[in-house]
Picture 1 (cartoon, helix red, strand yellow):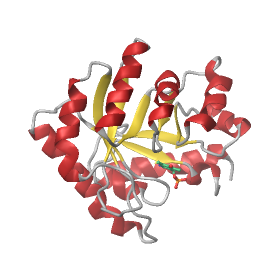
Picture 2 (picture 1 turned 90 degrees about the horizontal axis):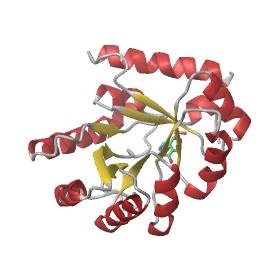
Picture 3 (picture 1 turned 90 degrees about the vertical axis):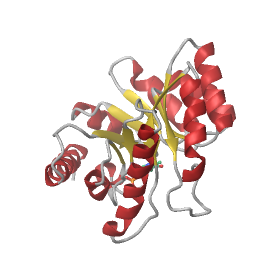
Length: 227
Ligand SMILES: *Cc1c(COP(=O)(O)O)cnc(C)c1O
């Protein structure tokens, strides 16, 4: 299957999931994940109309962002775990950081954004499963970090992100996505009403994530094939 055909299939599944859950069409942003994907195939996705791209490693992303910068209007999402020493570059090259997971990191994003005269869009990553192997804030620490982030003028705090455990039966991921939405609603109740985005759902589980309220899905394999 070509990239364009895969995109069509994924887009249709997104539309169907939105319809099933009574949500507005176009209420989900498809972030096409291009890690390990070379420039010609990224170009295929762009030609097919994609405008949001995601990478999980700053170093790998920079040459790709440079390569297509001049001839495309792409929004770049940094979706992976971010080390403090990579923040400067991330702020320079990306539009949104999905996986802020500590006050320290949030402070660094703010400082670098101010230096560069930018306001960086940020999501806080939450470890909803509690797995030791996963990055992300504990739900009980979320409110204090969100309040801190909301005070930084270099940051536009947009919402939450999570990675569900990999489960062969996608239906079993539902409770984790539901949990993230509950976290967001609790923050909104606490006055953080600017937080509206839920970045959740990948190739294996994006339809369930959309049914549970995802506003951004991050999809690689279903579009470019196995890495
Ligand atoms: C790789 C990656 C994805 C996409 O995963 P697929 O299963 O290939 O769709 C989504 N989010 C993050 C953080 C990733 O690193």
